[in-house]
Length: 306
Length: 296
Image 1 (cartoon, rainbow over the protein chains, first blue to last red):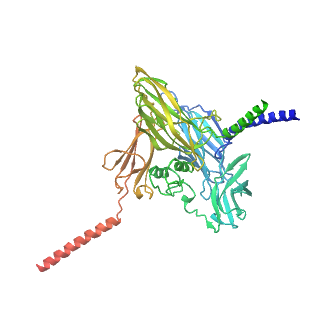
Image 2 (cartoon, each protein chain N blue to C red; image 1 turned 90 degrees about the vertical axis):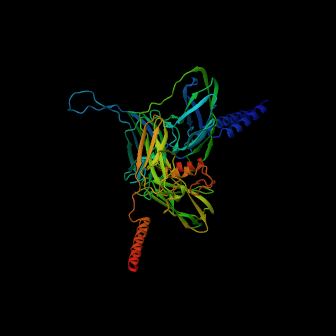
Image 3 (cartoon, rainbow over the protein chains, first blue to last red; image 1 turned 45 degrees about the vertical axis):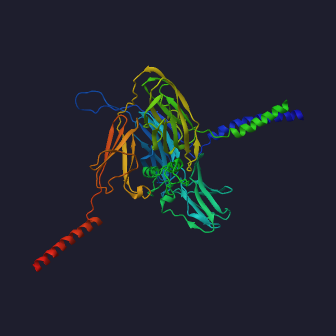
């Protein structure tokens, strides 16, 4: 018995050592923010020699046209607006088809590294999370970024809900799909619902089991083993209910300092004015630490719409 | 002896379980064009960011060097992954400080021919010139990145350094980036209660994809050209001057854009006020004249 124990014990120690070495690799591989992990990026070299226009005198050589383009395709929401940013500025917008599929190209690019990002906007003007693709583009190539699966949009009807009342969680994603609504409380609560033919979903949550205090809710959808997770929306369980005020876009889009429903150069300039200055306005100090630092700019960059 | 070994194993396992769980932080590397240079020879160092698989959206830090060994020439940010500079590289004695953001995040440059292997991104290219003979270090310090997680989670980056040797041989090589491109410039005039007390302010974004922007100048009406930074409080708050903005890159290629003045309003408060005042004065003069003639 002691011999058996010794062998078992040594094996246990060996396994423990093995896993302790493996754990950091697992931690590193796990993404911090939900990204489009199934996005496929590929490139093809295109050498397209355009013949010279016929007619005209003199013959002479033809011009060589080297098309350079980046194609984006994936799933957004039915008939929704999809925006592609290039280095933080809106490069092109498109509209997804009724099945939520979109496809769009940016052409005539010079050889350079571009930071592309993609986001969608639902029927209520609520924006998805943005996904970024810093891609090196060389002349004469076509880069395909396919399989983009935009995160569902999400909103709640009340910023504060009276314990026991219903809280409506709603948003949009792909049509006719199963969707999970996840409440982050002391204990995570998962509820299931379905999207309709237009990709809209709603779930009425009975808040009786939720504790008083701050909570978050997000939605999750899976299709063909691809998972897309929405941003988290906060709400409070309290003694009275307060309706969510969505008329003021500044309330929903952090970093939209001038309330134009965009987070762009103008908002950046306002924040840059207050950088390291004393007593910035509460609206500009997004982190609420009494000063404008890199942290506030980071929150703005996360919500950037161009 | 076996007991001792077992105890060592257990402690080692526990140590590795806890210590190795730390997530890899981003790294900054300094890549010089040349490790050995001559006196008066210009060279560059690229400051590269490797996010180690994470998505970051903000960076700030300093680069330090010895003024006895090198003189700073300029910073080229045209090929930087930083899209918006909060603070462009500014020289303060022997330290260059800078900060900026990458909207929607950066997790490494994707080579579409090899998409699984993400490459480090350039933050800035710093051009120096060799001065006095000897070995000297260029070091990074106080580097921070913020995660693209919506909360601005800060992450410290370890310092990095590179040794450069300045030989006694003079070499008057001037580093120049070939650039045939014209800069891009977008500008808006805005008013916001949180910016210069709701006065007219110019905000702009000037970009050059190769070398970067050397300077931006403004001309308001008949006022002389003036070097500015965004956001800029306009001198003419009436907005009745044509505004010209010029962005120039390090190859001295420029772009100028004009912003028209606001049209004069015929029925503005001021115009109505002045008109009424003039009418009253004329009427008064007319009345005085009449009275004067009557008494005369």
